[in-house]
View (cartoon, rainbow, N blue to C red):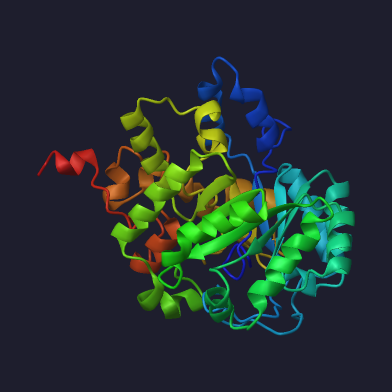
Length: 399
């Protein structure tokens, strides 16, 4: 999926249901409210396990062969076991039984599907906020018009570096220019656009340039993703995973530029960011509220199985696109039952089950560590995050 790496959809700022409202609408209500920080905290903790975001791998087919793709079996054509149009509509109906989440149409490359616009229209008709995650290379003027007409509210395009750095990562010369043209075609029609970028050793030296580029291009948001070793990502992990200290430095820098307010920013698959945000705010003597920290005040680190989930092109349900632990299958069970009763989801929602230093960390309720990286490193998704340099107070006090 894109949530699983090929061009990762991110968490669009346009959605997330909060009592019938999107996170954007809830944010507007709370931004200037006297007790906005209290309501934001309650929304963030999501004690009712409200389903807010669903990433759906509409197909495993894709026109690129990115080196970090979650899929080892990426196809140059549509897959026979992709959900049919009728099955897709039934899945959308099932989602609405569980809530009114944002539905991110991902892949593979979702624009490979000839019925993707009919699917988007159906989802919009059912009251869902729909976003599209694409590599952007297929978005010519005609395609851009179809996307807009389908009712999609935001399109995220993946740029994993500038110019040839992106092309090498995507294994297609000229893919950067094509993706940029795709963004411009969408912007010309008034579509909200977002750049997603996986940050790893190949492009960490460009991260500041990438931010400036996103601002200069006039996109609405920049989401950075810290590489998760899954699919092809496992094969490149040793060469591409950032050193934990560099990881920390990048997130500290990202916090600083978030305060500029030039563009919406979000660190994804980087739960440490929400610990860093609180450490910095404390140093600055600032209380974290929607007014001071925007929508970042209303969310937290790892959301896998708590407010988000991922549905594969075969109908398998996972906590997120990077954690390959199946929670259920929509061909065998009602989605609502999976969301509410899956033992995998229940375990992820219980912070008391966190192990190692994550389990005793004073920031665990706002960070939780990346459950997918823990699974990669230890084989147990409740183990401690392996790429975090922070030492919890309980450990430092013993030293």
